[in-house]
Length: 112
Length: 115
Image: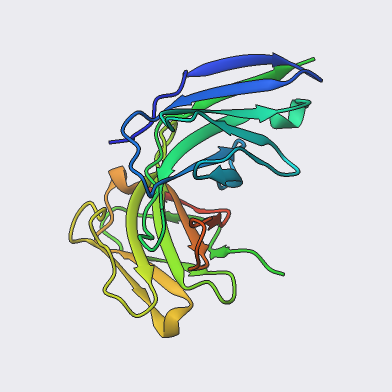
């Protein structure tokens, strides 16, 4: 079973920030929070990951709460090409490499 | 550098036939994963290879499914006596074993259709 809970769908206006929430209340101390997205008919694409601290890269920012029980992925200026299914996943920490359990994700629709 | 590649991109087969799906991971990546995605569904883990360790086969749905990884690089997923419920997109991913979490890089997938 997936260890995360995400809203099934969200909308965002083009040019605005998209804030995608994720709950992971059972996360263990050595598990990371990963975000991937899947655009129709393509393989999943890595976006960002973090352990405790907030992270930022060229694609997005990841905000993790202090208790690590939830996080938010932020796409600062959403474009139409950001329309995709976004998956929040916990796992793969430290030396414990292995499968990532994908849930149903959030369908983000960016509209003009 | 090249990403993860998979072949064939599409495969149509008849029920009862065997199929082989190939994955070429990113050079230098020691971990390799197979997933499948049925229409409209999320990804389902199948099997995971890490270096020379015994693979984690916990996700294989039946004994008709098997996978090999030769020389720590290329992997082949074999499905024997295919059934219609095997129809799905089969995705391969690879990652580099290091500290700081495992970022998996996915291939484009093989779309399998069993008639």
